[in-house]
Amino acid sequence: MSAHLRKRTLILSGHDTSVALEPEFWEVLEDVAQSQKLALPALVAKVDSARTPPHSLASALRVYALNWLRQQLNTDTEA
Image 1 (cartoon, rainbow, N blue to C red):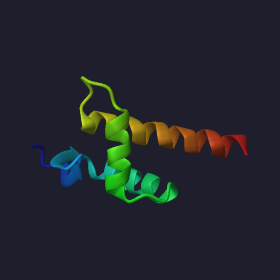
Image 2 (image 1 turned 120 degrees about the vertical axis):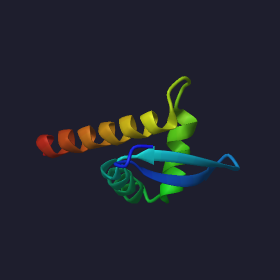
Image 3 (image 1 turned 180 degrees about the vertical axis):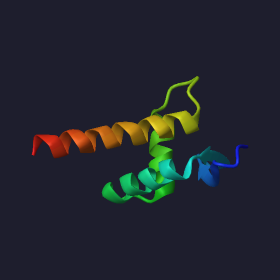
């Protein structure tokens, strides 16, 4: 694993699952979870259940975070 990635272990569907992401992505995902009034593991489980193979969970989380940030930018520019 690359030194710049931060690994977290979460329980998804009753199984330990490890995900390695850049710290910046974890920070955004924590913001998303807070905005949706979810715990981070619940948000990760939500993303996991919506992803389609062959996409990795790490990739799905990065895309989810990016799309959330884009939505925030669009909301800010429309106001």
